[in-house]
Length: 364
Ligand code: SF4
Image (cartoon, rainbow, N blue to C red; front, side):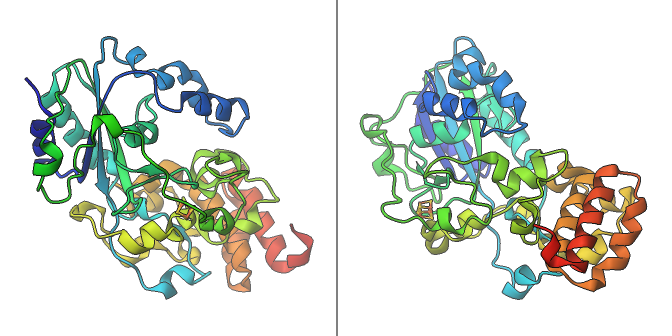
């Protein structure tokens, strides 16, 4: 008999911070997800549409699935010097990408936990057709805030989430919650009161702080306007009207989490050394450096990190936008050199940045 306590103890050994359990079934909030897709808010993330049926029912991913285990690992590290993050001459990188690529760290551990549960289990860290956030809420790991992030009431939202689909039933131990003294592990929620209550109340800080107004309404993210989407998922040209609003973010964005009171009050450093930045520049490299990186340099700089996902052309595209927003003539020589870049995408954004620096009023 496999119990929630046994799985939680194994999860703790493997370095996970949060854990919760739920019987497999239709994904909670499935209709909301489908409406979101229909509204076109997913932009170019067509893989979401392609796998929508599986996302709304994990039993289509693993036929015979009986239980779902959700785990979370904090990636909160340190609070960097404010001057580093507010320096417009630097390009900001989202916190989750400062250290090692979370896939490399978490997937092997999640697989080991999955094998512990049952050999036939499937394990995903945003790598499969599972809506982790919805299941995390269902499993009692927190509530989904107006910024659409999973928020733990006493740990904030800087978490990687992983999901295990398992063909075995996991027995919830009634006394587990009371007995659970394992540091950092979220007590298993009571199955009878599983529904998480949103803790946002009247707060709307994330909605008003979003630089690109990516929230058409609370709990709804228009990914097409989200800086994370624009700097990572979007492969082509960044819409002209959004570029000036993107500030100096060059890979992802943390704004809607940084302003959240739950993050400000409760976030605490991760136990995982791998998620700490090896050097300070990894949080916000100098734009003048980034603009000069060739493909080999880009790969050498970001080997083993999630930033590689943007590819050189994506990161330089983003750095051009940030340089245009910086507005300093110091960037002009590097930007002019990029007018001959092998990538048309980079050339176009370099030209935009040059125009913005030279005549700021003429660009959006
Ligand atoms: Fe909710 Fe406020 Fe946090 Fe937004 S900033 S997720 S509204 S608590």
